[in-house]
Length: 220
Ligand code: GAR
Image (cartoon, rainbow, N blue to C red; front, side, top):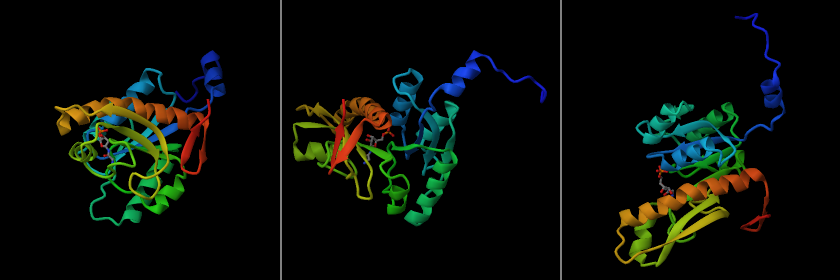
């Protein structure tokens, strides 16, 4: 086996000369439907990237199970009882180990430390089920419905050390209907989340954007 001749055929040539795919690190805490949508879009060629690792702070996260079923690197790093920065150092080490270029928070229900944000400067994205800066934090869909807004949606933004706060990359709006419940509104927003996250990743990886103050200017 060791003496097997090396393959110098066309496939090998192509592999050597193709640009390296950017490596995503997905962080999640639960269901993982945004992660699944990203993975599906990669599989069908709608997104040029690869998932290097999926990390969860919760062992029971369904997203971890999906990652394992898809044959991806799935790692649980439990956060319970750990100091924020101690925990973040463990996560950053795991992301480095897998040579991650871009970190995607996909229902990762933790605030990141300044250390984490510095380590992956402008290379961490988050998705939020509301039109930021309205209704940050937990239960955004419930907050929107209670407030009586007529339009809601989702936001993909760069992560800084404040909650749901960094520069906005993509927003999709959805109408709030008269007979909406939190569940029906959340479901309508989720459909948009699954598209918006891939759009935002594509923009960021393409490098065709620049920051002016808080504004992410996308060059066409
Ligand atoms: C998504 O709706 C995401 O926008 C939200 O958690 C859900 C995770 O679903 N994130 C936040 O509220 C962060 N502030 P998923 O696990 O099926 O992707």
